[in-house]
Amino acid sequence: MPQVTTLVDDYYKSYDYRNLRDDTKRQYKYHISVMLNTEVDGVKLSTLDYKKFPTRMAKEAYNQWCEKGIHMANHIMSASRLMFNHGLRMELCTINPFENIRRRTVERRKTVWGREDVQRLLEVAYSDFSTRNIGLIAHMAYEWCQRLGDMRMLTWDNIDFETQTVEIEQSKRHADVHLPIENDLFDMLKQQEQDFGFQQYIAPRPYPINGEYSPYSLTKLPKYGRRLMNEAGLSKELRLSDLRRTGVTEMVEAGVGMGQIMSVTGHVNPASVKPYMKNTLKSAELALTTRKKA
Image 1: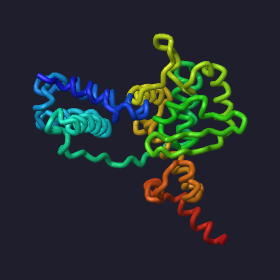
Image 2 (image 1 turned 45 degrees about the horizontal axis):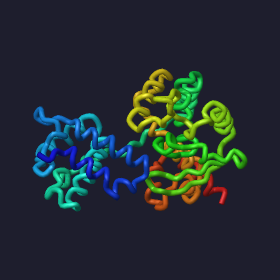
Image 3 (image 1 turned 30 degrees about the vertical axis):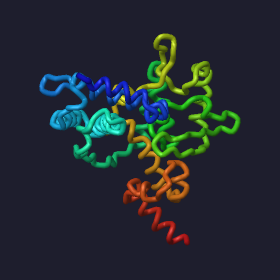
């Protein structure tokens, strides 16, 4: 019986998979591994015949994943769907059991941190070597209004210490952004280079595994971040992933123009920035004051 693992192995050998960015490969492998290890009706999905994979079991698996988080469930389903689409193209199977499963939507988060929350997190994180790199990832995400996933993967090649700037290629939009580094963060990066400059990542896991330093995984980083936030006494409503939104919202409330904001965030469509343009008393006061000065 041709098990699902056989199809997975074939997908990993394909040009489509081999041509992906290394970080994307790691994400797909993780999401597919979750699918393989999921049990439905006492049967592990990895043991099924991929040519006869029941759509009912795919739907039940998706429902299980959604119970732990809709956002992650959608990623797992997307990776599984891509893998079965490969099977269809190669005529290894005739159905994609994940194809017609309707995605659940996640309500867009609007939570932003207060500056005192950010300061408290950094104080706690930077006070301990074991948590310092998580703090640095959070610091960079907030200061540069970038995604945590991109910050955890930054290498020393991204930093120009002579010009005090950083260049970032965003993994989601593939946009290149070139940003100045604020003095406090720059001082932290100089200290970081002294301690971790011998390997490629700016903020890796602080202790090597089998002699090698590696970046935090997308699944572990939020968990470690939550522990740190609890230690700092922060609200459970806050997430590390809110820091990009927080930085952008602060720019909006400071009256920064749309074009300037897009040069930082990497957006190419103004409509993508609109969710950050929430109506606040601060932004309304700025608008009215600016009008009177004109």
